[in-house]
Length: 452
Ligand code: XUL
Ligand code: CO
Image 1: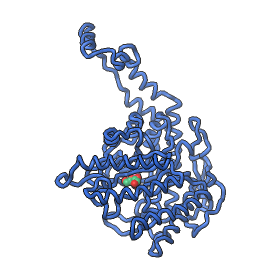
Image 2 (image 1 turned 60 degrees about the vertical axis):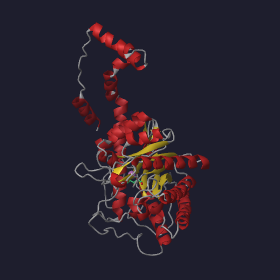
Image 3 (image 1 turned 60 degrees about the horizontal axis):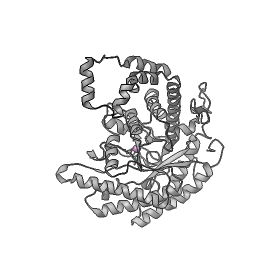
Image 4 (image 1 turned 30 degrees about the horizontal axis):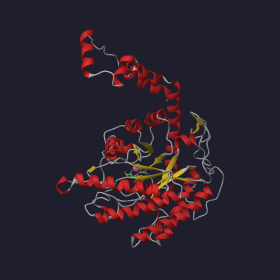
């Protein structure tokens, strides 16, 4: 992208006090009043395992938390009094939001963005009017994307905020709601295609239930499968070349969600013959809520051939809900990126900051600080993950641990050349007693620390 040039993004701004795009200054950078921040590790052209750092990470800023979010929580009123919010003409406000969004992308030098249809344009009196509003803002995006070089990582439809979706979208007991959701997704997918989106995401916000007392679970699963199949059919019909992704999450807002985690999504895809058509967008906080680590979900998706993209944020071990905080822990991010690199990289996915400011971070500049510092931390974590791959000690340990499976008898078992009876006979005849060996976990954990 060309955000390092001083292209002026036409609009209302400036909204942020960073006069020009943030630059890479290296580890020796010291902040001053004139330049409070420069990247210490995010050096977009640096080669990491043969690819530019920007292409290994493919960062995206999301529209919803950054430009729609107003700081409310379950107990409190909005705390962010943003100049681009307000009560004026909703389409003018939407244009205003687009101006601030592209100013932020430009300052950060972030190569991608993501949005829901309802983040970018207001809901109209009818669906046709709502869809038209989305398309009109997409016209604005087209111009701004051409001006700045910022690209679309993915688009999605908001099928969870409006009361019509309170009992789900595809899994609603009322087929009219299913139809309405289908019409909304059709438009969001086509807009995503027009903007060159690399992916299209479906997060099943309310695709779940509160109580089985009023729910036909089997029927709802069938509805969800059919909805997904319709999206895939339409993707092929219009020639959209991006990936279709489901974003797993176990609960919140509903008590039980059908896209619980990677394993559950895989079962759903398999049962509808969609496992080669749909992949997953894995979010750190969602993994945690499902009782998994981020790296577990990534490794499992890779093993099943459905790894697509990542929502990069962080949960809180002490809080059982989706806190969506910006990542700040180099070791945690490095362990996730190590799995990504080991599995062949992020592909056409990316690292989308589905993350929001804390309620007290009320200054517009906090948006820049949050993204820029998170990008720098992820860049540093990528360099740690690179060391882990290049050094190879972790991988050698794993290979040594499974060496028996590469030997003749291990292969014969897996190739199906030995039956249960043959194995049993062999063990009895040889008087075989397996010898326990150490897993060496503490040693490996120290090794990880040595790369930091
Ligand atoms: C909700 C969530 C969504 C999806 C997009 O927890 O993560 O914002 O990323 O709908
Ligand atoms: Co998300």
